[in-house]
Length: 132
Image (cartoon, one colour):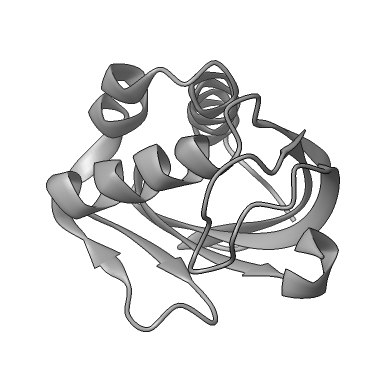
C-alpha cells in the first residue's frame, strides 16, 4: 500500500478544514465534479453546491463537530480507505435524526476517491445507532 505524499497532504488538509468548519478550504480542495455519498442517505450529494450543503447540515447537527483519522486501512490507484472518529454534541437535526443534546463519538469508514492526486469525493459508512 503506497499513498503519495501529495494525497496524504490533501487528506490532512481536508480533515483539518472539516474539523474547523472551513467551507472554502473543503470545497476548494476537491474537484469541480466532487461528491459526498453517505451510505444510508437517500442519494449522494453531487457537485460543489450540494457537497457544501452536506457539510453545512453536518455542522448544524453538530456545531462542535471534529473528525480525526484513526488509521489508514488501504489504498490503491483511485482511492484511500480510512477509519475515522467523529465527535460532537448532537444539537440539531442530522440526516433526519432529531437532536438528542448528547455528546456523540461516532466511528466511520471513509472511502476517499481520487482523480489522479485530486480529491474527487467521499463515500462514508457509519453507524446511525451511535446518534441515539
